[in-house]
Image 1 (cartoon, rainbow, N blue to C red):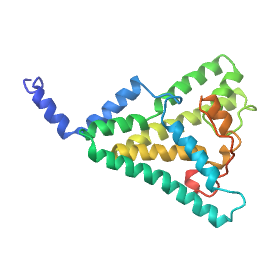
Image 2: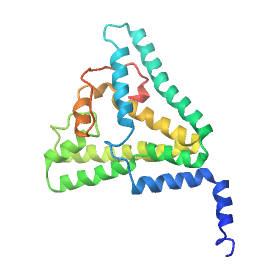
Image 3: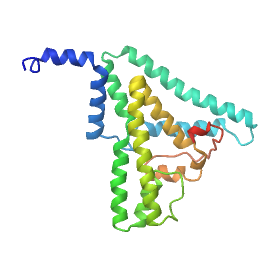
Image 4: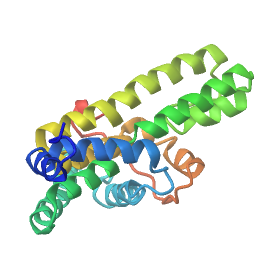
Length: 229
């Protein structure tokens, strides 16, 4: 009992299990203070991805050149981010705290949960307009023709995939590679969101509904590996 009340024991436990404490701290902060789409730093990441795609991926370029440009663009964005955060991790005074901050930025399952509650309320009230508008912010498809049943099915699929991508998978990559790995995974997920071929028709309207500023230049990114689509 005395050991449990001893602050030194708690300090030693925190020092020996820093990654675990960072995980719980990040999850707690995300639960209490989730980042909204308007305040997420990934909105600037997505905007830069759109701008980069519009510059390096031209319809007039040969197929092989477009494949090479797509791979180099991906390597440029993710490689630069990895080098930056790996170097910063060596300079911080507390690595567990640094990992906790990166994991907090990478997690995004609470907004998905809030989206689910809002969508369920709109469906309960038979408000098709509101339900379609909510769903349009999360999917790369036209939602104007969906019935309430279709909205419910698409919403359920979005909740399952969103919770897996922005919650379970983020923690999985944190366990494998720390906060840097979790943030890099989330960065790739956001690139998949804006570089998906099906995103061309709906990208600008959906981002505007979420409060992001968008670029007017259209883009097509059809030569990424199929598992990123």
